[in-house]
Image 1: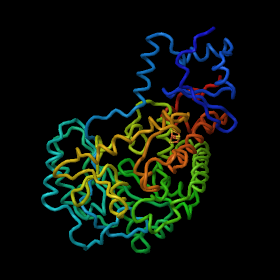
Image 2: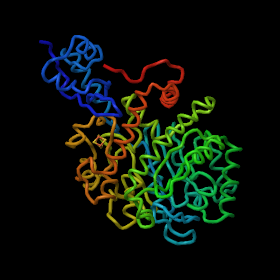
Image 3: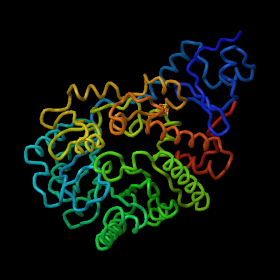
Image 4: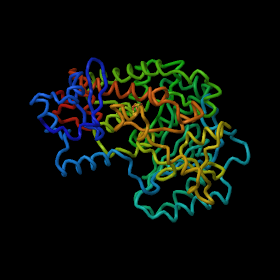
Length: 470
Ligand code: SF4
């Protein structure tokens, strides 16, 4: 009788007409539907046994067991110190988008900017920062309403060898002072572009003059810096889905090659103004799948300009590249207040921007501390301890657990609790659908599909088989 050590954690799932098997190291293959029961009764053929052994599914020696522990550890998020700060120097904004997620304040309102003490605490934090790299994202409100505060932060971090800053702006206003900040080599610009200008206007600016101003400013920046320095993100209304081709062309025409397709966020003001956004799982799944297939077709027909959907590429990285745990939307465990925090306009600290929105909407206070006294608090610890899919009974049986993540803020936002059976949650249903799509593409025999997958994984020149079959 052959020893089948280490196979206990093999799980399977049906994807299209295939059975996908994976262990908790994230190694996977496609196989026969009865494989698990034949493993249980020790009925594997020599060929099957050799396949599993050659691909390290069997752990009989000490070395194989240690290697397995190492492989599992690489799948876990390993962060120690601060890497990413989201700063909100002002809550004021010069637009009022219907799905504004942060309960923004009017441009002329008072009391919605960092005061002198808060600025001092934030700059102190950055001055004392001793690691090599830090990413700072300026959010709002509209952060360019306070270029002086942005400059103060950039100056405070000038000793950090690898400091990058992203300024998230609606691009309604550009002047020499703001351009002076954008000119800095380590500054990136992030804006919103909801597809065609007509869609952008109906969802955001509501005004032809403001739309023209946005377009003029975006074009000016693209001419000046090129698309490398600028990213644009669409927010998509699942109850009024844009034509996928139009959305893609609006980005490609401006030189963008990455589109991060996001449905309207359920938190914040969006919750009140778009109640339909609570339950759009199926419509969104169908749209997302169609969007990915459009990209595949387009990439095959226009091989000089390969376009990706950012989150789908992240999903592929999670499957094929253990250790890809810097994307805070999808990692496991998902540490709270360790490598990443948000400092709001009033100095309160939140674990994520979504937590800030939820708090500002008056639904639940998810602040974990403040910039003056810190965030090593019981609140942070409580959230941190449960921010994992490790012990979830549904996830433990799921073939996608090694690649998946946990978002407790999303659960709290939708259900007011975090113990809803996992497979009933929006997070789970959305990710099951994306992983199913990813695996059906991985096993597709269509060369156009494989072409896009290889490019999205950064393996454009390689002749490789992404998914093996037993
Ligand atoms: S959340 Fe859903 S998709 Fe993710 S591991 Fe758990 S059961 Fe699987």
